[in-house]
Length: 105
Length: 261
Image 1 (tube, each protein chain N blue to C red):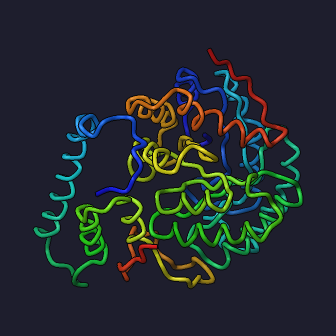
Image 2 (image 1 turned 30 degrees about the vertical axis):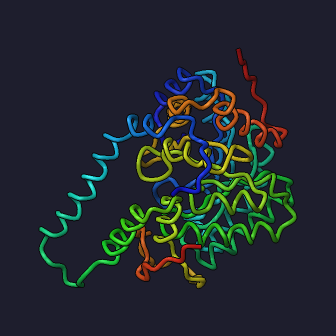
Image 3 (image 1 turned 135 degrees about the horizontal axis):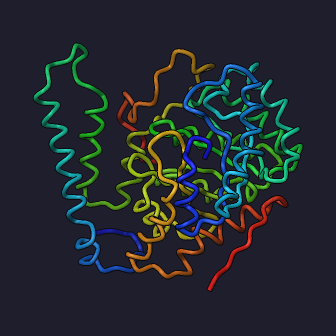
């Protein structure tokens, strides 16, 4: 059961009416994306940490707890404390971390 | 708006926009000299106000070397040295958007020096936080650096907050900004969610209008989103007009005329 205060003025039925089709389509995008990975040729480095993080995040969506967006973002966050001296040679942000096990707090 | 066409100013004016505040930011490529930044600052302080004025829009700007080009301290210091001259312009609101990009020590050094610049010249501060997996860590490092200065957190806007950073930003007394994008970052729908969860104090929305996929009309779209959800016009005005006015009016250069029914 959600612990969130009821701060959205619409009823739950109204919210579903407003947004269901849009998010049904987004869910199908994710499903099709995972299927696409399955159909692709195997890579040279084995499983990808971003795919693993995405699948772990999907678990948050259906765990019955609220604050899903915040917890997904936390899962995908860098939890290390180290700071490199320079960005020289660093790749762009990937959207997930190799440790995947982001701290929830 | 330097990377946008004049049509965008026209569409913004038609949508009710009366003023824009443009941060100094990455141009999509790294500039090769401090003189390149001097030309850029002239564009921000001289040309863009004239271009916006064609459509009745007041143009204000922030000045800095952005975090993405601040990883070379020697180069960054050359750029910082020319900023005070431009702070005399009457459309400059403060130092921004400073912050971190890859959360490096070099970026942090320059962040601290630009915070000191804002302290010395009693300027408002606009902060950029990293995107994607770097955001939470970077936001915390930035807030620690800001808290070590003498600048009142009520004079600092930390932008690009998301669901995992907005709570800490507000708890530490800073203003929180939500720059709205069409898809990849904070959307009008999620920004409305954040208002519903975290309230409307010291938080506001703004439109991204940069060189990537962005939408200068994102704020009007967020107002429509809030209206669709049944939020009151007073709340909608607060997070899209009154809160920005309250924060920005701390700069003596920010002067706009707002007409309300």
